[in-house]
Image (cartoon, rainbow, N blue to C red; front, side, top):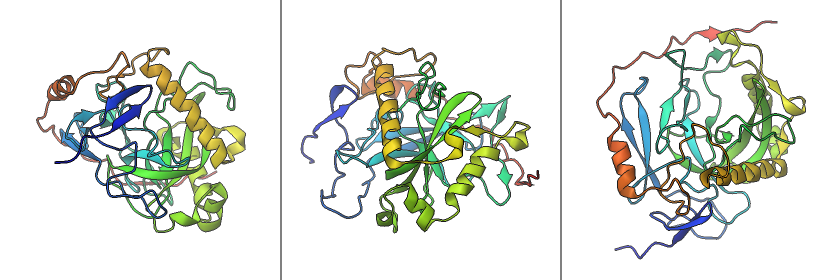
Length: 325
């Protein structure tokens, strides 16, 4: 039998951890070299992909249901620049998958707008998302708090992250990344930060320490990223997106400060010190949060979700959009 698990610091409360995700993964050492996430988290599908009823729930290594938004620690350990990333959208795919912030235990689902499942368009020469796309857990861009850098309030979601390594990750994977920089997208008057990061297990990860390394070792990638975010809604008939700082990427130090700020906003949310509106804050590991629930209550919440297969929808035609001036 495995020894008793250590206490896990999540937000402000101490809980008996069912995983040691906040510390080094089992089998990893504190020395140099790649860090491997020893399958600390698992996922469970409900419903059929590409259907409105599809949900991807998360479990920890002990098999207990958890929230990927609230129960997965932000940082892997005490290292300054080592974070957990929840992969929502694998590179080159089109389905707009996201953490369901308004649902109990926040599964991943496909976004729906005007009654239709959302897919991002292929804008030549890009196919779907051009990075592994996801979110940092335990962060929240407060829609009532004006960002001092952008003069716009947050978008009410966890902070977004673009992983630029060579591997295509699966939806629902929790990977360890180091932050390289950040882009400030202004989406319909809201601040929508986009972090740039790389998996610590990428073969070239040792080359990347800051945003200038992306310019050096992956020339054109940041320019492609800026254009992707600028134009990706244009095929829907919307105007080009805007950016703070004239579309310039900020460095790692700036990005870490933004992460710190959004983590503090999340803490306030979980302790009911901020108005979360329709955000669902149910969690199993932030023990002194008023939204904390037991493992049995979490299981009951999941079991109430229909598990029958929904009729599968066909992914929209793989057309290409050519945007001229």
